[in-house]
Image (tube, rainbow, N blue to C red; front, side):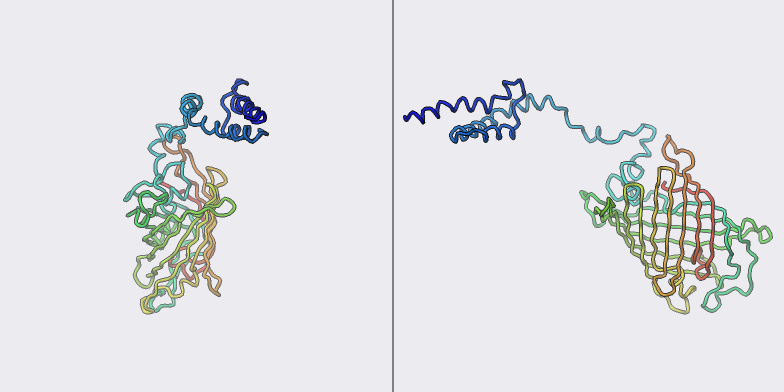
Length: 384
């Protein structure tokens, strides 16, 4: 063997010992694969470098069992799903599951968009706020009119501008998983909702305190979890379609009713902002049976709502409706809800102080063609 080759062969053990055993000599744990690879690459002799790589590769196979028994043993075990989940006091456990769990966002819990935020079918939940309010208005409709014949009373009724407003609004999920499979991250759902709003002339004893108007609004809603990340941290959460009937259940000349089909969608930013939009189309009726012709040009053809939670106890909201036509009519509604007290088990109360200012058309169905401004203060139950 040539002397030069013999010299290279003799230097291989020393090079390998330096590359692979240097960490152990310094009292350290075996080098990470990336560090050992760099030491082999730093060797200047080609044969030594190649042998170092070969020996390093073979070393990994027999070191693997030792690593799993020593290095891995020194690492803390990964937390289980139960350990990593937020802990909930036992007294709140019943309220913190499914659609009441704080682990999920407001929209996810409201529409039960995920398997974990699901509260099952045929259980009653709140829809719009359930309210009892005192109303002060700029005017009251004492003689509601409509362009359809026989839809205007012969004389006015002496109602007062101050009255009470009661609203009941509930819904139930009647089906789920219609288009999403069981292993999907999102869950679609089919809902039935009902809202009833009544204006009560409780401060008018001379008329025996009648209900001036009561609107009934049943609807069927399909919601699909169209989850997507949007710019600036926003998250698109759902899309949906619905069919709604609204009527006041009165006979002529005060009968009012219409039917709509709508599209809707919503997005949120953390739990601080929620934005929703609806666009609807009136289902045509025969002119002879149309109680309120032109209602789309006054009440509107779509709405945009924005709600902001500056903190856990306050919610500010604005809802804008527009006719989307040259008439430019519609309405704006401003709301402020403040939490009162605490709920069962020390959680967030469902009782709110509800202050609202409305200006425009369609505050009630008999006011579809009458503009007025309404200020209300009362109590609301939401999110149950």
